[in-house]
Image (cartoon, rainbow, N blue to C red):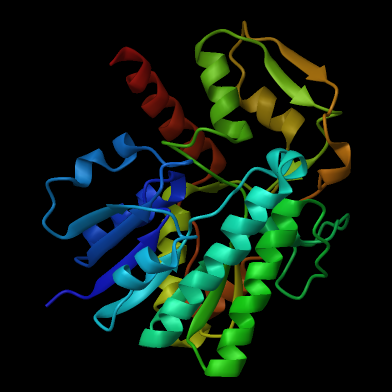
Length: 311
């Protein structure tokens, strides 16, 4: 009999791909999403799959979370969150409720049932890094926005459940993930604007760098880490080990007739100038490494967006 995995944020960008990968691995999947960020169409293709069960609901509702995570649950992958850095500076309370209170509800339900938990963190908790060496899991943290602060708080609470209750928790910090079904993020925005012949707009000078991870590589990482006994109690990064500046990214994506323009940054204080992942720990513990290069990932995304536009 197949094991059951609960996925919060199942209809979101990464959640949709985690669900897909779990189903491919023959797990039963119970999804939860309130559609504040996720969309029904993201998971529509799974409707006919007998191994997928979906519930619309909010992780801030303790009762719903307790109903879904029971003694038959093999693991919970907790992806549901408020995720926008800029919005967190405008509406910090929303991020606190979802990312801290919601995570507490998930942790309590997992504690009651001794369910292993894969908690989605973020690379945005790390302090600025100017060196050419990648950021590993021991790098200092310095949350520069309420988004990063609430995600780090959620990680700390989860770690307390590991140490205090021996709950099998793994904290996941994938670097900037992109791919089909993503609505926000520099890569899909640039590709979509290029397909429409619109100017690519870069905030600030464009020298800030990102380590860009294709979403199917991220989904494999999330599942592998959640189910790894060696990863319990650990923080794990996932990335390619290569970064690209936003200027270089724009040049890579822009077609011959597409213009590139620099505009004023709305919240420069929240910007991290360099994000380069050191993924060696995930490779050592899980044997995980990314399969897609940036060029291959962008091509996959471009083809998908073009097909969406023609439907």
